[in-house]
Image (cartoon, rainbow, N blue to C red; front, side, top):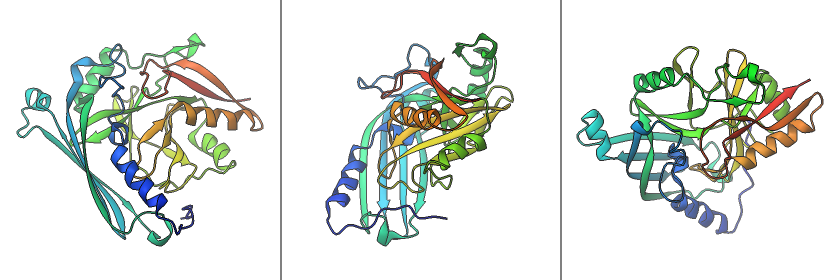
Length: 299
């Protein structure tokens, strides 16, 4: 495993920035990326409103010399109404190892608790499966009508306490393999050795949630931020969720920027090009995402 962490700095400025980033971390870091500036789900017009959940989230970030642990509590009366949960709380813990704490620019020790609104879509696996089957699987308007029925993923999902929560939109599609796509990016300075949160996509062909098949990023750990692409391969088609991460504990700060960076690389790669906004994905307008996806084409 390679270590792409920047050299340790003598100043405390970077550490202060990291702590500030924890305090400012948005819902996107933990799968709440549907929340808009007005506190409403950004894809109200197209999302499964019956799965809407609103409430509060409490996030505790604990930094220790050997690891960073993020514990979340998601609290909503909607969980009691729908599932009879008492107390109506979902919990999750995720951990990042620190192989070289002396070089990763984090404080040696710190603990911070943040509280914020929770506004998302959350449902159990069988509920999502029924929803996708009733809605016809995916809702893509392609510029090539012959491709409309292929089982692309629309969202990536976070697994939370026995259910799945919409986390981020898919914004990159290709007819090539995840290995082909990753190969172009790693040839341009990215790495396929990635420390990350695991996420899932719904495969309408198999009616199952599946964990990402491959990931590439501009940094293995990305403690101070990175561009990151997670990919799923369904029936020979790649669905990708590209985003720009903030410092650990990661939140998505942009989608369009990462999508554009990937398109630029493929435009300059021999035998490839990126077709911007090829697909209308109908998956919301969170952050800078325009609900359209770039197609990576090999010729």
